[in-house]
Length: 515
Image (spheres, rainbow, N blue to C red):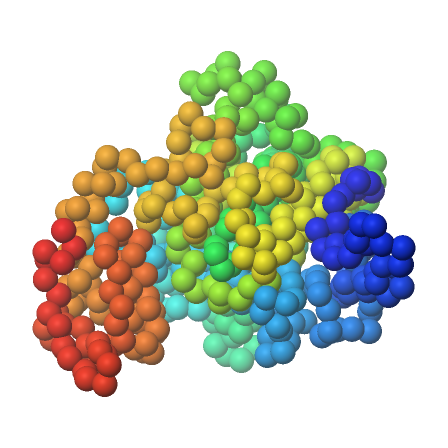
């Protein structure tokens, strides 16, 4: 396995002997114990174990809750009640379901666009939902079902996805909308479905991308990675990943799911997989060369589009996701996550976000996967540990010594605007600035968010204290003067109640307070 032999031990606490001392050092008499890690089984757990051993950890399968570092496949294996913030590390984040669950990802993006961005004029840099998410309907909602059934036209193709499953489980293609209606009628009549209930397991239906860009006639998607190395402060990084290809030539009319789904879990089911597996995964360099040779001559894209332009588009989409869910993530020091983000490109070179996966596959059964995955996982772990240790010791987080293949796309410490713009001339996606358009937008819309109806729409739940925090964050990220207040009640007038010493007074927010 491709692991660096000389990885620095970021957690080394060895005590050096004093100079001019003939006595043995305390560390030689009582060596510091190795930090303990707990690694859950499955999904190439040996890779994680080898990485952690190389940087000085000791695996102890018995210490499920007493650990320094824990890596498990699901957050259901984490007892959050006894997790020690700032002392332990875990590869999951409370609130990650808001973007790793297919339905909740769509709802998070939809809510953010409808509730928050409706308050202000969207800058040109912002991508609307329909620009990167295929048309989506929620089957568990009657209104959405009726819209879908009425919208469907002959020739339309839809793909149904259970929201909480992965590895292609439960996915099916729908060409005849009556098939979907029959499923609902069966369940209404209390007939037991053959596989799972599309009412019990919430399902989304998306318009199928019928004109995908093909590689030698085969459908492919891009598996890139999003690393949230820290939640407090929020730090997000991107890795370009690799390409996943179908084993079979693409045909919209082919009912074989292997033609339409590209993940390894599905492809492995075919008897020909062992003979063709090397053709199911490419590096980004291979895709870049292919596009330059075969796609570039018949399109108006620039040379090395995959290398230079595609990452910027993907990062812009990732930032949309982060903006939509960042306030729903529980801020606990020591939580991090490595997520697999799947994107597709159509014939018009338009980029679509398909889904974001928790616990992405770490299988290394092809040469490309062996080249990419161990390096990605090792760097993700090293970066996360480095961030954790620097936060723990109150050190500056940046620059990151472990940074190699990842690039930082979101950094709360340097965040200037709710709509960060990637500098076109920069090779590092972590550099953001405010465009002139954004500055004008902020000046024009400062007061809009203070209106009572805006305040009401921006509420996340019925907890007024959380609403106050949510409201305050919106002001901060519009570069406004921070309001230190506790909301006691809402009134029809634009007022905020605050405590000052033992007295409680009401202040009227005026426009000039923010000039």
